[in-house]
Amino acid sequence: MDKKLKDLKKQYEEVPIPKELDFVVENALKQSNKKKKNRTPHWLLGTAAAAMLFTASLNVSPAMARTLSEIPVVGSVVKVLTWTEYEVADDTYEANIKVPSIENLENQKLANTLNEKYRAEGKALYDEFIADVGDIKANGGGHYGVDSGYDIKTDNDQILSIGRYIVNTVGSSSTVMHYDTIDKQNEILITLPMLFKDDSYIRVISDNIKEQMREQIATSNEEKIYWVKGAGLPDEDLMDDFKAIDADQQFYISDKGKLIISFDKYEVAPGYMGVVEFEIPTDVLQNSLVSNQYIH
Image (cartoon, rainbow, N blue to C red; front, side, top):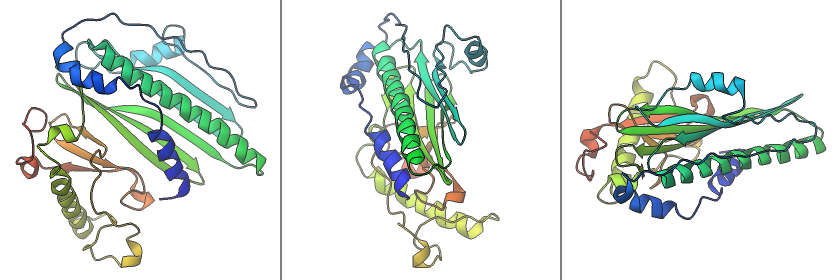
């Protein structure tokens, strides 16, 4: 993994998240039916020298209003909207950063906490872009781009899964994904460890992913390569061979109730493979699952 990608992931993971998140998750089940008033955020942003910054608030931009009309409604009540968008265009430097906002979730504490996290991440990413552009210009110039936004991975009566991506381009490109999965009925944030009885899921999932990797390399008509031992690749081609997922590995739950494990570009495979995902068969997980409420 190149230094720029490592720095980007480190910066992303160090964005401060409100301390009350643990409290929110712990108490959400007890308070999920409690209705609270929505608040309307207001955030004004400055312009940077030699760059054009466009900030769109939900209630003031006709262009944004048109965009919102095309965004799918999640379930019958909860919506995911583009709350703010940063755009920078300056010769060979470009940025497009869309910040999502979860609206109409009855558990307003959970919604506010996630939305504040998204806004902090978006602002930090923009600030980092401006600083990096300054450094690149000071060293003779070059090309640099950042594209960040979100995808609705799952949208049904029970589950809302939001995937947020950062594509960073300096010569070659890197892609980082982060997911949030919400139980809309109980209005709690679902984490990977809470789905399982104990940490044995790490080994179970990792072993299955290695098996899938080897099978894909052996049988795919396309040229697929993963950095996994036992797939017939020379050791020098393995880079940092995949050994196990992280305890909090990025994941989401599909519309069919399947666990999808996600790896960033360059994390377990060469860059041309991009972001790679593995659907873990439920029968492989069955003995480790707390229940089949989410995974079935």
